[in-house]
Length: 219
Image (tube, rainbow, N blue to C red):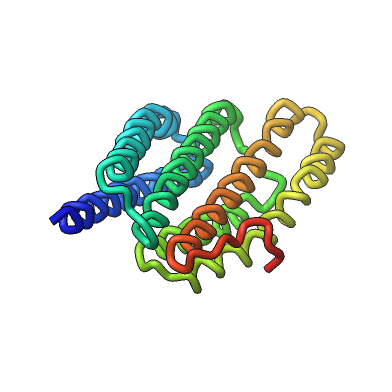
């Protein structure tokens, strides 16, 4: 009977983490579209929405601790709960970075004819793909998709490294735009951090399914 109750609790945990995943992914997509319209109201809504994600994180953590205390799971069930605890934290941190992106959009909304001097859209698409794949890997317990995420991380790192040089070139060319240009590298940094956290989620999926810790391994 205890096993039946535990599996029900684990099923509930999976639903909670998938619900949070969907919400965070939607927030990330919305934050990137802010740079097409510089919508102040949408930016403020995203920033307020952070409280909901914080509450979801607390609820999931409390549920994980309850299952650990009541049922003392072992093997794959224990790995699942440990992975969910970590993924829960990664998702909350991703949403914090989404809020940072929204705040930066709000700061830049006062500048007309804004032109971003690096490939924000290309970088955003790669990060979005990584986040989407990592969450699909979680839904499907698919280690192949998780490995795909880890191979994409180097591309995002390389794009991030070029950001500062591109911004520096634009400052030299148009010094009168320095006030807005000096805010641009932080956008790239936020995206690079989200990519790192998507990779962390993928690593936790591999651990959850195979019991293998792949952090710090050269792929």
